[in-house]
Length: 258
Image: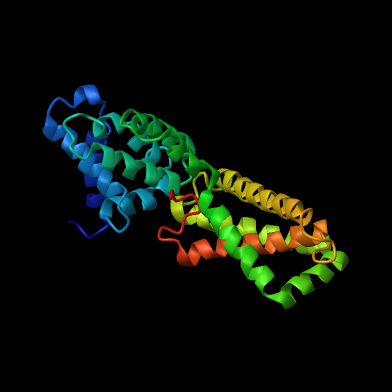
């Protein structure tokens, strides 16, 4: 494997890229189709030379080196009957696209996986960012488990509610942006950050709604429900949930499928 990133290396990569993006009809032999599969498997493998070439050149020329569109265009090559690993490869492509927040591209792979017998519900669950929801539960537990912090947030919610909520959410959105950019580079990072952040906010509002419902079945002397406090605690929990993905998730992506 070539370890240098000089002009000749780029020429070689461009030549192989042209061959790997040919339409299925032009790939007449199993050897040609296998070369396409090998090219894109390496492009999806962190640490591989092909992966780094896409990352490095994708920011410079995102149209020419659009790995998501090019892999999506060759899904039929991976799903070909001659490929004994077609289901495994399709799942690998889907995970790669989901980690990069390319939800639209992943839909086409979902269709092929459903043809292979995968559950529609199991495939769709990852679009609601379940890792965020599970991490948010841990965040709620961490905040509520620290009695002094919960009491402090109760007083903050009455005195500095909006400044604190704004500060926490700006920080959370900045962390999501860093997470997205770490996965895909700067191309499309802002747009995908918006989608991922809205998903995080939806989980936060769902959590606040659940606590409001729980307050109705708990005696009032045991729990005095206060919307600003609940929202502030939930915001801190969300911030902890996002930070947790940076340190504990294998791929570090909020959208990594379960």
